[in-house]
Image (cartoon, rainbow, N blue to C red; front, side):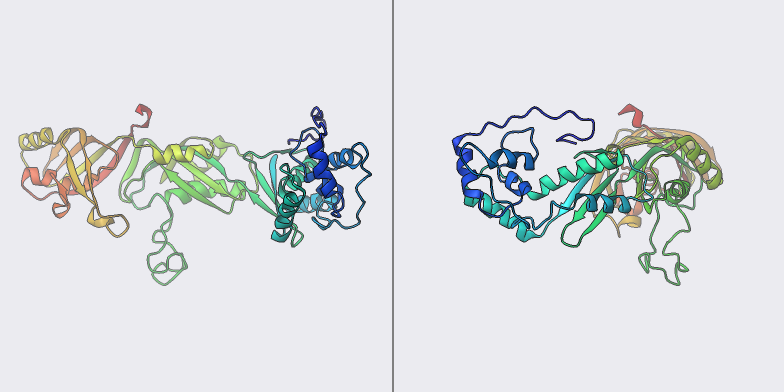
Amino acid sequence: MKGGGEGVPPSPVDFAIDAELLKVVDHGRDLGLCAECFGRVVGRYGHGLTNPERAERLAVPGSLPPFPPTATCALCRGGFDRWSTWVDRIERAADGIEWSTFSCGCRWDPEILAHEELIWSKVGSQWGESARSAFNRELGKRVEARTGKIGGSGPADVVFVADLMVGRVEVTIRPIYLSGRYVKLDRTIPQTRWPCRSCHGRGCTRCEGTGKMYPTSVEELIAAPILAVTEGRGTRFHGMGREDIDARMLGDGRPFVLEILTPRRRTVDPAALQAEIQRTAEGRVEVRGLAVGAAADVARVKEARPSKSYRVVVRGEAPRDKINEALKLAVDRAIAQRTPTRVAHRRSDRVRTRRIVAVDLVAVDPGRFTLELRAEAGTYIKEWVEGDGGRTEPSLAHSLGRPLSVESLDVIAIHDAEM
């Protein structure tokens, strides 16, 4: 941490006392402040000293006598006098949690914070340091010395907040992230946990008390072994898009990031976890390339807009040459897709323009035919085939002049490597 700790060489002292500083000191020396708060009045003046050391140098600047000692500080009210107690509380709050980096925060009585600014104004100081800043720094030094952990202001495994008003330490555990690709082989499960529409997750007769529309999901099948190892309280699943519940995700799989909330264990073996997921998911979901990730991976996955390839089995009949003619006309043609009827209850009603990048007719059988196609991100494939009552124009059904329906749909590739 800044300011040094055990084994850290002190910063060079830069603290030249001039007339302007002496004027501030003269105005502040009779305010009944402790050494910490007296030093904080000019805490941003110079560097290389703690606030009590700064106060000691200011106590006898030339002919000025020492500032009067005080039993109870008129500003912090003893807030800087109980370091060992606060470190003890932090150790108790962190009991059972795996962590190697930390940061400190604090919560003060707002009246004290307002009073310190009033003092800076009264004595004419432009260098005042807030109680919060000084307390966080000094507490961090002592936690480092006691625990050997690494403190700082950047991303940390845990954040300790000392509440000086109630004498308690609150601890926040930073999430951990695992990234990979999933293959979904089951046409009956959604990507993420789907709360019951009737009870919104509370549990009711419709969902048989589960609070869910579906018994499980890709997220839950992947998360279960990871939560068992990390002792996390929950997860957030971030996928590079999502497939329909009744669609499979094949090929190399779909990129995802699993965010583990409040993990009490941070050290994981991705290879072992991946093997356990394969075992427990029982052929419904597979995970590939599982690795420890970072928070930045979430934005990368969520913001990506790669094209995708599909295999779709279409119910309906038409001559092969007519199908090929319709497909040829469909490639790279603007498709206006109004929000599909099936998702209109949860998505804004607007028209999106998408394109089919490439399409091939791979099989024609009695009553059905099979296509493999590549489309821009966000293309509704079922609606492009069926027309959705005219909400997608042009559609394949419209081009062939006959009703069509999707029998099955598979995503066979996510082309994120090309981005």
